[in-house]
Amino acid sequence: MVLTDPTAATSDDAAGDDPLVIAGHRFGSRLILGTGGAPNLDELERALIASGTEMTTVALRRVDPTAPGSLFAVLERTGIRALPNTAGCFTARDAVRTARLGREALDTPWVKLEVVADERTLLPDPHELLDAAEQLVDDGFVVLAYTNDDPVLARRLEDAGVAAVMPLGAPIGSGMGINNAYNLAMIVEQASVPVVLDAGVGTASDAALAMEIGCDAVLLATAVTRAREPVLMARAMRHAVEAGRLARRAGRIPRRRFAQASSPSEGLADLGPSPAPGAASPDAVSPWPTSSGGPPGAALSGPPPGIASSCGPPGAALPDAVPPGGASAGGPPGAGASS
Amino acid sequence: MRPPPLRRCAHRRQGERVVSVGAPVRITVNGEETTVPPGTTVALLLDALGTERRGIAVAVDGEVVIRRTWSERSLAPGEAVEILSIAQGG
Image (cartoon, rainbow over all chains, first blue to last red; front, side):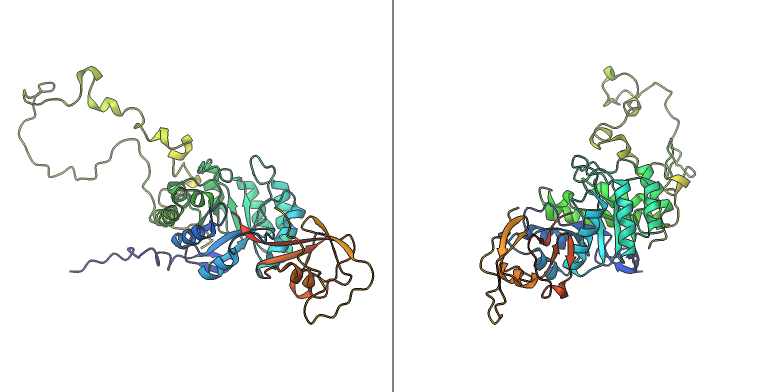
């Protein structure tokens, strides 16, 4: 008998039957890799290829005739679609103008709309963002809006007609992961356009977590381009996004406080009478130093060392952090209507 | 980022009829003041700068000049030209 695993598709076609759809365009990869921060174009090109991404963000800056190489040539060689952004804009006016320049430069109506409030946090300015989104949608743009992890603002942007909402996990470039998994889950639950986690990802588990929470895609740059080994991290992110997506579709088990045996309790062998409590056989040597006091189990009453402490903020340890409606406990895969 | 220097006079393109009449036009290109011959269009300016035309966009006084009008849009005194290209960015 030959056993085949229908879900054992390779990375290349894992998304074949599960595409990301934004504004009617299908993407096989749910990872959007930004081009910012790479040490050089060579490394960037290899990371882009390793990530499997099909869309990458670019900024618009004054031409620099002394700059080595051509980003445009990298995009051409790799065939990766470019998504111009409005990074560096603090007002709706500037963002709209920059979006129009991006449309002109790349001949695309798609834009990653980014209107930030200040240099220190680079957090989106809700008022200017919404204003710019409305203007750009009116002007025929396909707007992918970088936004706060605020369900209300996400809804307002959707009402304005954006093609995707892109809440942050944490501030741009901070690598802090997902600071408010609860809000992110709310955004996912209410959205009828794709939700793309944008900003804050520090390592692969952050990307997987975003997908497990139900995001349709992950957009990241710094986590790859400023990693010690960008190409390796690009591969890690590719697999993390795929793993997180598959886990979301598969449906995680509910959390429970106590153990639930996975082996049957019936049919156990009769191995003779148990020794009386406390009467350890003479040759049994306890591996536990008596000085620690109490049974071995006592050592497990606290969080396992090296887990809670190494994972950043407390919320990071709660992948399904009680999404409203218990979506984590096996809701339909990709419950969001976006894909 | 330093704006690019103007390498040669904007109207000296081969085969181009010299239309300069009158005083040079003082404009700003990517933040740097410069002068171009009267009648210089966006297209002529780009030629003079030797700018790669793919992946770029031009704005004059904040308004985007769409690509197909580059050869029609001439630059007036005091105007600020921004020539932008795609760059690495998240």
